[in-house]
Image (cartoon, rainbow over all chains, first blue to last red; front, side):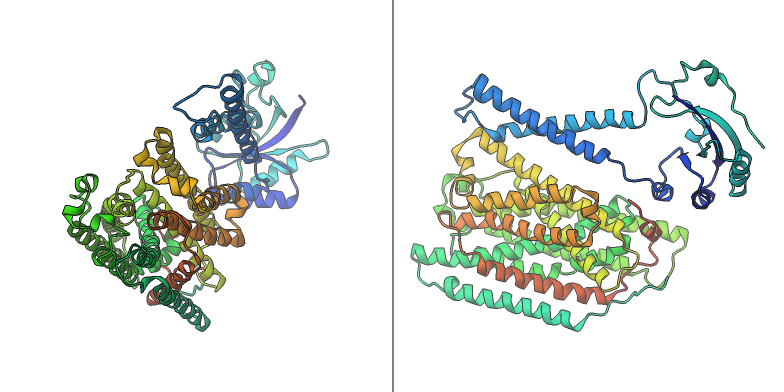
Length: 196
Length: 412
């Protein structure tokens, strides 16, 4: 995966963060992401993110579960091994509804957890690195992606001017498997540079 | 932001609600002439009369439970220390203020059915020595005295506690609270809401549907029945609140109520439609599975008899439609969709009550629903008429409530 350069700024107050996001976007810099210790209402809208499609995935997993349960029970109880249970017809839908429901929930839940992990690039034994470890504690961390043409120093001073503190320039590996730093020991051990 | 605090009733609105009430009264008169006025003690005459009373019973009980569910909504959210509902809390208060009037109508109808002399609707009202063993066994619960006393306590309790909770809400309209006063105010609200919920639990969630509705099929019983009825009335109550909220928004009121609040009301409708289905199904499946004649008798006319169409229509309107339509976030935030769904849910649960009551008196043919719908429109007109009157009595927003800010910045 390519290693990219980011300008990282920290905020300690939502009142500063929101106007800053607005300013950064208006100026045209590309925000890679904003990391916060807790969900902040309205942050998605401020960042201009589209709605997640996790719901749609969940719905599809759900109906897959319903269909699986329905077709499997139908096959076993009417074709493969019909049993006379209390004189009920072989095809007794009401008795199957609880199982259909359970499998719907099971498929939707497990499928959505796995999809969520995939989307967030989480997996067992994958080490994640943070732009700023304090973004899991009390700091909002904004990362702006740099390209060949962007002026590093200009972005750093711009971030400082909109209220960011401890602005630094960091190298990170992006994309899927972002954070396999157990393989990239050099990068993992590199101390965080703090500019300014 | 300057807000319109005082609601002014539009002129055309009154005409509409009075016209609906006129339709209701006309339907009652027509139904009385065609059915209720049948005289004599022949089997046929008793059946005709019970058809008239069953319709009144179904409509008055349904609409009483629905308007009372608005007070349950207030108390449940208050007890949970919720703040989001405050921007439209006065709307649910105004709906709940219909309880005394609709309650008196329901009480008169119930008393007329119990003491009317016919036993077609409530078999258990027959003299004690004519009851069979099963009804004799239930006589400690199903008797005229207990029915009358408990019905009076219930309706009076709903009305009085609802009034108390409304007056607490209005008491701080003209004075801002200090922090310690605010804490005391929240505590007072919580205590009174808890008292209401205890009464609600003892009535709507247990005894009242058994007495008013289930005893039409006096030999049959289901412990699930009250919860199922409660879920039915509560989801319809939330639909009614939503309709009034949308109506007021359309007229330029409730500036602080936004799509976010609508979204949460939509979630309530969605969740409680599923909850209703869960209870409906729990009741149905156990009876279907055990297949004991004395229990399946309830479902025989409904599932295999002439009510089959209504039975499945009930499930489609009240389960499939909310499930599939309200599942999407966009449809809960869309004024058009949510209005359509609220009307559909109110109608769907009216159908649900219809199929609870009617097979009990007429198992072999479905009565013509047209006049029942006319009476339902009358009740709708009455609730419309009373609710806006109550809305106009107090400011539309409880501006000194400590949690109001939470509702204004509410975000789902």
